[in-house]
Image 1 (cartoon, rainbow, N blue to C red):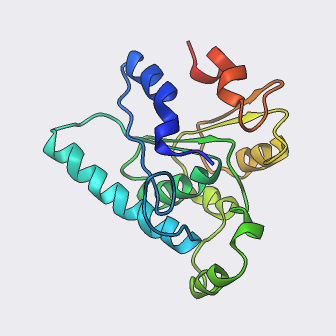
Image 2: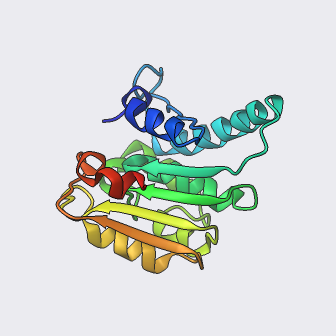
Length: 186
């Protein structure tokens, strides 16, 4: 399980490339209190995004905003892109899921999920309506979320400007290391 503290390498690489990076932590992960549930994950991402926009306004930041999510983080990233695509310039999915780890959320959280009714829940359903430029990065040898999921998400994406990058030999946890410049770009 990764936390915000695990993102120092990507943060320093982005900073060197002139990209500002805001990494969010969710309830029950890393040093954050609480217990993670599907419901809290979706609630938290909207609250974090609202606070992030306040920070940007206070700092007079007017640059482009991209939303990025890795693995479990693909769920809040797609949720935000789905709801705020008029405000963001693009979506980046790294080792993302299509069915939101359905097996993980069985039990108590399933009651909350059922309350959503007709609302879009799965990543695979939301991405069909996300039109912002979309980049999908996935490891060819990922055994946790097979590369076929990334290809399916790419095919389902409504974005006209979309790209999929499959890193040969990379799995779920070593994607950035094996991908190197293919992951980070020139």
